[in-house]
Image 1 (cartoon, rainbow, N blue to C red):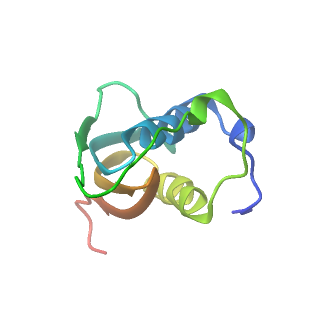
Image 2 (image 1 turned 180 degrees about the vertical axis):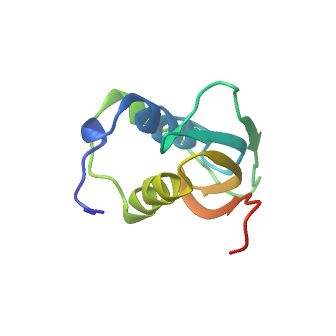
Image 3 (image 1 turned 135 degrees about the vertical axis):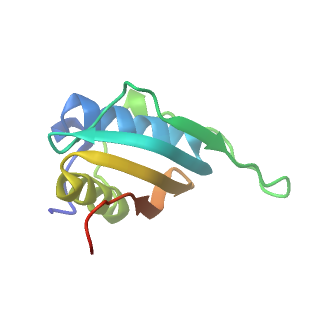
Length: 109
């Protein structure tokens, strides 16, 4: 996937996920359903927020502007496309970016 992809080039479900991770900042997105290679907003995933009391997190508003996607976001979008249909058990988010993905599979890897 092109690392210079812009947020505005994402489809609505992908843009929703990028904005949700940005708002979450630190934590996990759990139980993210995927259908036809796209993240589903419903049934809603669980957002588990983590806070580190020694760090000033500030605020971010990814939904307000267009920007080039970081490589981690592009990799997550590629992983979602690879899953196709299923459930991503957990996406660990640090500073608004995905850093670890766990997905469920009933087939051998």
